Length: 247
Image 1 (cartoon, rainbow, N blue to C red):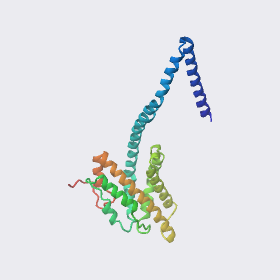
Image 2 (spheres, rainbow, N blue to C red; image 1 turned 135 degrees about the horizontal axis):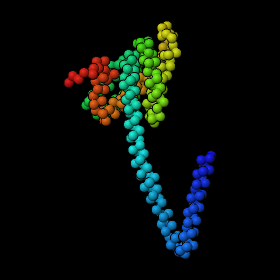
Image 3 (cartoon, rainbow, N blue to C red; image 1 turned 60 degrees about the horizontal axis):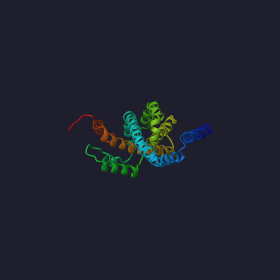
Image 4 (cartoon, rainbow, N blue to C red; image 1 turned 180 degrees about the vertical axis):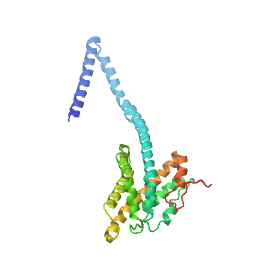
């Protein structure tokens, strides 16, 4: 409310100042007709000024700021995948009863084009994951999330990531899974309903991980070929991933 009052007061003051100056000009030079002529000329130029400044110039500045923000976000997202994301994908893949098709469709190579990434993203979006929380080591998943908890919290607290809704959703899914696992002292002898609940949490996290990982790989290929080369060799979907350059 105070800000609104200040805004109105400023508008009135500026309008009054302009009126006083125009009246002063008329009283001194006695050329009211010319004063109104030039005043209308100035007013006629206002729409063009709005077009140039507000729309075109502001759009250019906004685009520049957006590119700078995207660069910062991609750096943070890259840090996430290096520190935790890739290992999370490996551990979550172990709970998937049929990972063959995923490995086939997400085996990113240096020859991939924008269409390949688009096709892979569509596959991830439509895939029917069969996750069973009893089929792999929940303790390993729990340990990783506990070790990386501080790092993940620092990412969630970063204001730059507020503009990236899908990645923020992924972080919330990861945190929820971490809380669910930490809340259980043991994973032995749980009822089927609880195992099913954990399967759903893993599935949510895993599907979002794969989608964000693909976007990250696409970004690396376009902007950082040398990082993309290592990321391809260390593909978390590939069980034979090796950093050694063999070809």
